[in-house]
Length: 144
Image (cartoon, rainbow, N blue to C red; front, side, top):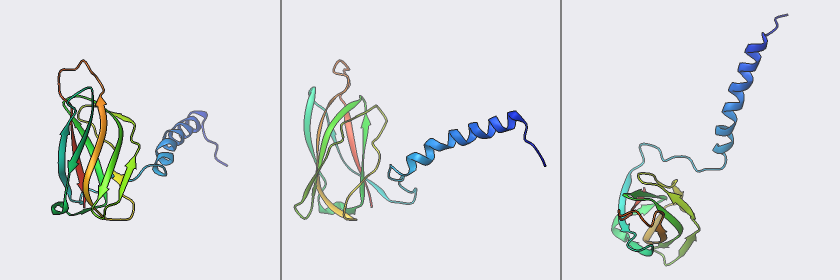
């Protein structure tokens, strides 16, 4: 019978413990978009005041999407919620309530009901750093 040395047992336990968080997260978050999925820039908006509300018009020309992503440029943004208006007249409010830093983005937001035509996306947000002279910009991307 072969016995393991105490250090090799400790090493095995550390490796197993390090892998647990990534396995646990896999069941809660939507998977990342595959590299082969076409992604289009659908529009941009700027946070002009301390708090702001903008509506990015997408329209029928852009096609049908199954998920969207928000990317922040120039200065961080504190998002409250977004409202997605679909081509069939339905609307869906998503309580985002998150801070997104410069050059960072949200996770891909999977649209319920499969591929959907997006008419517009309303953004309710604020400057995360009111004293920052840079004007924050958000880019809306859609995955086909």
